[in-house]
Length: 58
Image (spheres, rainbow, N blue to C red):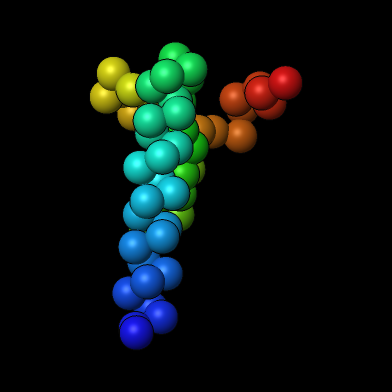
């Protein structure tokens, strides 16, 4: 049993589930890219970088 591969699989499944939930609730997911940029990804494929000027989500 390779724990690293198991963890990578769980992380991927968590991301896939987040995308499904976002689609069902007509919202978006937020994640950090390898370059350190925080991104909002909508279920229609739109990707918007998050800036410090964005208002907080209440």
